[in-house]
Image (cartoon, rainbow, N blue to C red):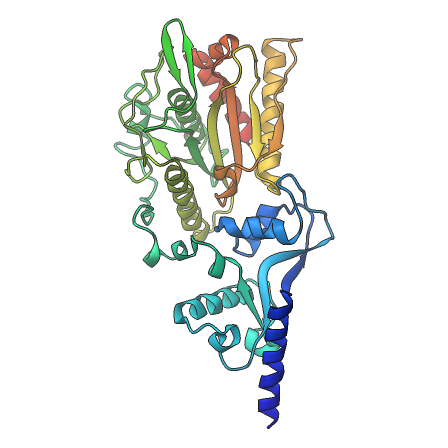
Length: 403
């Protein structure tokens, strides 16, 4: 009799809440350094874009809102009173796979100490928003990845020929000396922008077409080689096996770039971006399992503005990523110092800010996103068409990344 009364009370609570339109969300207090993305990442909600949209909706936030330290915010996680029988009867949904996913999520929270007790002990079941409301929910496990977004299997980092020889840099620069080990134990994922079917921003100079992907790739290669010289471990995520570092002013555009592991670049922009972020995240988890925590993603691009607008190098970092912000500031400080050294009195107008970009939002390591120049501006073009200047950019970026 008592159990029947308890069940009736439970149904009244659930049905009453449903009829009234009331939803009980998990509330959390924001800590110093938290942003929307870092907070949702902590609760394993960042892989589904609908969680971000729902978080903003239930907290009445706009895309430019910042979180306030010490304030409580609702997470897109519904809190239900557990009926003591099963997840399916609690949620009134007989889908077995759905129930397994909800249980796995609650167990993950418990393991990460984001909840103190098992849902069967404290009587509270957490149901993340994406399980019922995100079309991408089926993509969270390898067994259910859609065919147009393949499972990422990444090879180990190794030399391609003799010791300290990396063919990716081309015949002139393939042999890489080990100058010192100041960056030993640090991992960098170097992601040159665009490539394949997408050349990125386009400029024109002296009758030549300047493609963003070619010049960003050359600087990225040079930075990658610099890191190797100092004992670090860089991964070139976007690759062109037959280009290498080129000491030419005008770099011939092509479309044969691949990614780490050898896959070609999809024509669809969204799939291209997820291909890169998935590879970075797979490598990050692989290296984290080895105990390596110092990992950084560096994205290199060249902007396109009005041709009369001259730009200094400017940088972005993810919201709430204090390490990424610190590294971006260090790079900017290095660039300012070098410009003052080489061109005293010129001044420097580069900036650091956070921005909601896919490669910042969807990758797990701390991240820095770098825009090297305005490809349409004649003065800025000198910064990228000169191979000596491209090497200087790579050298100064290296100094900025050194601790």
